[in-house]
Length: 252
Ligand code: BJW
Ligand code: ZN
Image 1 (spheres, protein in one colour):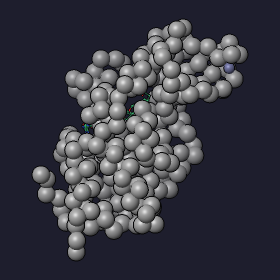
Image 2: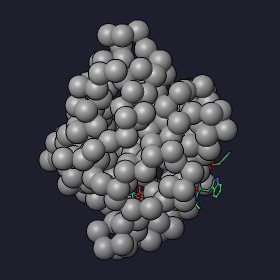
Image 3: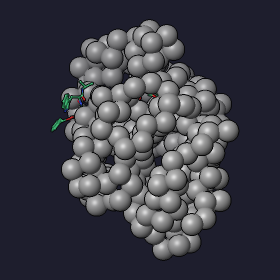
Image 4: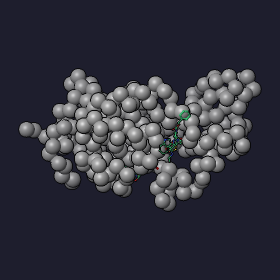
């Protein structure tokens, strides 16, 4: 059983605005691979330049779509874990008390929504929506693996996954909303992200510059660890539920 800092528990209980930024680590305990973990991360086996850029899709749409469709089908078998559930609970608690809670995710798996979180700000899109590169038509794909790669739109155009690749702009409205929330919150939680991909990682900076308290939950150190007010080295699926329970029970 972890003992948490009392000030952190009180802030988690009392703060009138909280932002949580999540990354792939939040879904690791659900069986979704992260990107940069040394042995198990996707980028340990595949090169991001070959798969996660618009140039890669233009060069080899078949390979890129096949890889993303495999990931879509893999995630279909994954369930949210205790970390997702705790963040959904934090949102419900905040709503009941008339407080602000904003969940910003870099994840493309929609496991937060599966756990009951609402109004999730998706900075890097989602694996579940595919978009025609010619007419822009979007469709949610929850079915079995595609039979043709790249899959085709009714207009004949190639369809790409609705994720944000390197060098692509993030969805403007989502980024703006996330920046506004980060720049005005009291407590910022950075959970399961290596904090090396921008502009998402810049949200932590924005929160720090506006005097928010920052809690990081990650088994590994990140470029922001030394600036976080609290750094908990652990797995979010275990730490978040314990932390939430402790803050519920905290009386002062
Ligand atoms: C656990 C755990 C457990 C394990 N519990 N934790 C400024 C400075 C430098 C570079 C740039 C900059 N601004 C822009 C850039 C370029 C680039 C960038 O940031 N590059 C850096 C990598 C150097 N950014 C971009 O290109 C972005 N676009 C952009 O800026 O456009 C500008 C523009 C303006 C106008 C016109 C046009 C363009 C786009 C970034 C898109 C990122 N896309 C990806 C792929 C999505 C699709 C897919 O799924 O394939 O998003 S890359 C990948 O990284 C994915 C993730 O969302 C993202 C972040 O990774 P995340 O979530 O942090 O995962 P990991 O694996 O890195 O970390 C996991 C962590 O969990 C680890 O720390 C573990 O320890 C921990 N962990 N188990 C808790 N159980
Ligand atoms: Zn089309």
